[in-house]
Length: 382
Ligand code: NAD
Ligand code: MG
Image 1 (cartoon, protein in one colour):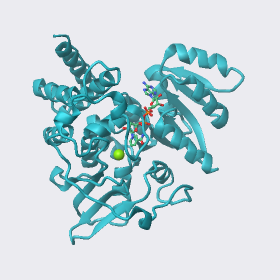
Image 2: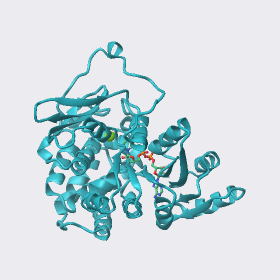
Image 3: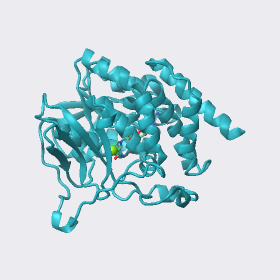
């Protein structure tokens, strides 16, 4: 029996993780955490019977406590609660399916408590990779990527121990606006940006996929996970989303991982690694697919990716600025407070005014997040 804790259980990755649990009979969920959807959380509690559940919103936590008082479950709230779920004593693996930099502290505490991490929450690694990576070594814990591209890379390098990677081919669908130019993006509405061609995901990552900021975050994520130089990470647009990423070795051989776009595969792989299990669902039919095509990403239109390469080169506190600016800008765009192109414009403005902090600590990272938010608000209030 495996014991797991899921942070972000009501979201896209969280619910798919629970589907994997449902399909396999040997995982016990010991902790769940979510933001405010207590209706779904209650259903999850009744089905999976965790020991402890965190609801970020304090009022909703109180309401949920009343609703499940017939059960033997502890309801906690806020950051302390999130950390309690991340360090729940029985859990062996913590699935970080929470969205945003809020994941930094619980992820760090989970590692310190010796839990393996199934990491979906890329924002944590992007902003605090320099803290997380050494911490994993210190506590002898494994980090298993859930992001489909990074899972693909991880699968491709399995059995290649000692062989140097000469190139990582990080594939991208190109998002809903592939082929468009900046002037075509002036009047993009929230509904347009939320239509991802191949994947069904949470709102924030769907917007990030449309701006290619998601791919930018993934470049930085890959740099940390696989310890490769930036020049060796090449983004290739592959609109059919069949090749989930690939790795080239020194002899020119390329190993790619392919499949239908289904997050349950990387989730299940992370939970059972190195075992592969049956996973119900569609299979790739090459005859039906007909062809797989490739394009260069258009970084002049989708500046979010170009900025990410700059950010990754600079390192230190710059990834935090890039990520924090994006988190606030995306939530403002979703709330119809700013235009689509302003997302990446605000990221760039925040980067330009930032004074680098070398190897920022967790509290410095969180301060820089607040400073970046304040900067963006001051710009918009002018
Ligand atoms: P989502 O918006 O669907 O779900 C986010 C979850 O986090 C929800 O359960 C929400 O309640 C919870 N949450 C948010 N704020 C919280 C807080 N303060 N305290 C506790 N819980 C909180 O997002 P998602 O699409 O599932 O993405 C989650 C993470 O996984 C993101 O970092 C994303 O980049 C990454 N990811 C997602 C996919 C995907 O297919 N959805 C693929 C790769 C990577
Ligand atoms: Mg991805």
